[in-house]
Image 1 (cartoon, rainbow, N blue to C red):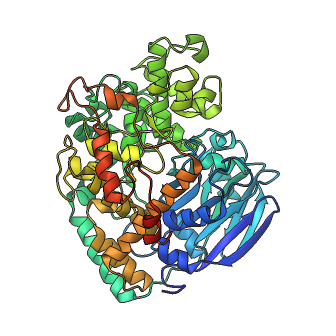
Image 2 (image 1 turned 180 degrees about the vertical axis):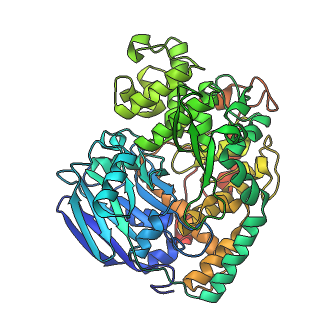
Image 3 (image 1 turned 135 degrees about the vertical axis):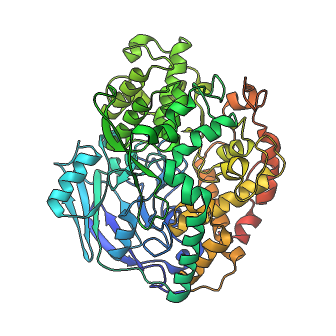
Length: 602
């Protein structure tokens, strides 16, 4: 493999403290071993940063990295990754985003950007092909995502822009990096790390292209994959019609939609009112897709002033945001859910963590653990106005919003009940109850970035039956199956292709695209091994950083579901962990061995 085959061959290194910019050759051996985006960004980060680093220290680094296939004709190849140590969890943080920013960075001639140090005043990075400059951003500080983007476009022209909002500037631990206004590298607080460096935005314009090794073979693989996606019932029909919110009724029917912070089970009686079907009845304006997208699952939505007090216009929500501001808070008002999500987009906040943190606060309040004076108003499940008010307060850093901005674990710990935080490694679990869907419980517990569904999406086999149907209530074989899903996802994330394509595309298609683009003769299994290498690299970092062992909140382990198809079930984690650790070739305590590291050339 060579520079010019998938990779463009240059990394930008920006020293914010010194105000200097350098261009350096891409490490091609690491590119071969770690592919790009999540894998390659993590490799660079782990090579250069002490795992014990304070995420907000100037010595910490922040890396933007594109994938090997980002910007190519491969389907939905518009992804890039933002990598640093997460201030929310202390784990390796790698947040993935779509839109058009990633391809534009490669067209400008750069596979990635490494930010070091801290600027002494707000700045943004200007990238226009070969012209790269740090510019003053004092006039942008304090502006939300949409405002800052509009001001920058008026200043520099039609560039692709990634920026943060005041949430990132003020240290909200789940602040994201937003690009194309409504696309988010959303989880783990990468926006807060960016803000700690006084880096407001990155603006990019590129006029180049991305070359592949075997153009004809790559075209054939791309067309084959696009045909598969177009003809697939999920990728070709379901997501296009209803977006990811199509999952609301599906997950509710299997008894896996957590309600009221999971306290009252996982069946939400009014689920239809916050579903994709409900959204399509009136609030949906049009679909929206990312670069090279064949699916267009994004939702442009609107509520008129005469329809609700929560009127407005924006994008979303995704299924997880619809759940966090909906069922998890006991709310069945789609307009309130939309309003909360729009605020998150404008203010650069992760709606999964924020919605789940509000739900945690509701339970703490109802149990009498949070005095009303601390909040300023009653905060009960089902109160849509109070929920939206909390979201706004968090964005503004106002009053109780400062506490909400630290996430549910720190909130619940502050009031003496950390067990009421539905989080793993201090990151909130998303919209699937692990008592009703056993494999996703295992994924939450073992995910290298804390409570997360997209690092090994076990909903695919357990609920959707893709690629094969497994019973969500059984534990047998879930460890080995999850290991495969995690490794494949690490590979997919590192190529720069959207994870949603893997509802239809498997290893043969992903490996075929990578092989033709990179010019390698590696087998499918050798290419999948790169995903396993990435997973173990992340695990090694977390071990060195002192991240807690794999477990779940006590509620999932001890409190039986009170109703629904999974009534009486708890998450049977320990038996699945044993299977998982054996499949990974780790110790019974969950530690990778030296032999495993040597096998993977770590």
